[in-house]
Amino acid sequence: MSEFEIETMTLKDVLESFRKIHTEIIFEFTREDILIISRNQSYSLYMKARIDGSFLQNYVSECNRLIFDLTNLREFLDIYPESISVIKITEDAIYVGRERNFLFYVFSEEKFFEMPKMKVIYECGLEKENLLQALRELRVFSGFFKLEASNGDLRLSGEDKIKGKGKTVLKIPKIDERFEAIFSLQPLLDILTDIKIENKVNFRIFENNVIGFSFEKNKIAFDVYIAEHTGEVLG
Image (tube, rainbow, N blue to C red; front, side, top):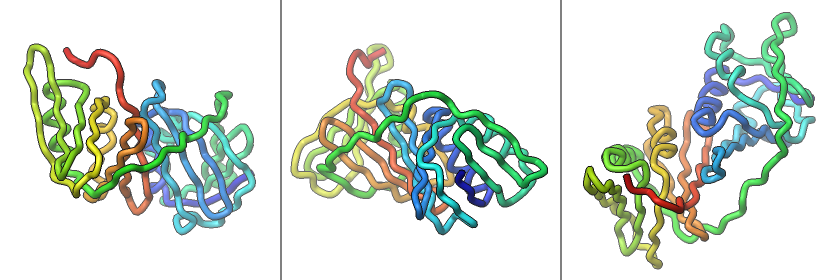
């Protein structure tokens, strides 16, 4: 059994971010911290967050990895009256609260998945608000955006056969190789719209046409990985 105490608001914020991706998450317990991982149903978007030991009180790590649906837990935390959540986790349940008001949650039977290993070929910092504004503008034209990077420009464009085409350019440090791929727009927009995310976002390009964004939310580090979209995207 693993045990820990954490500020309720911190736990709510972490789970809220994952709820925008998928309700099933993996809790992975280490001696020092807790890693949370999820992916969307198309396996085109992954997210992970690490809850550092500095956020945890009375932490005991005995479970290794567990998968569960966060829906009930997230809803319960909205009405949980305590500022500190006491969590105990067994192989088939999560208990929230002290002994007299434990709640029970059953874990799913889904098999564990591994985060794919990817090599970074480029990274730079971006202003979240600039990126968000670009994505909001492009959402008018399409649910997908083309991302092109070369020299000192990061060009994002969206196109619809009827509505037309929009394009915006963000300045970035020089990139040695040209990059071009198409990605789904809405999941990224859903994540970054969170006002609690700090304005500095780290942008990465990986091998095999994968992009990533790292950011902090209430001092907890999140990483998002988005695979290239293939198929028809206009309309």
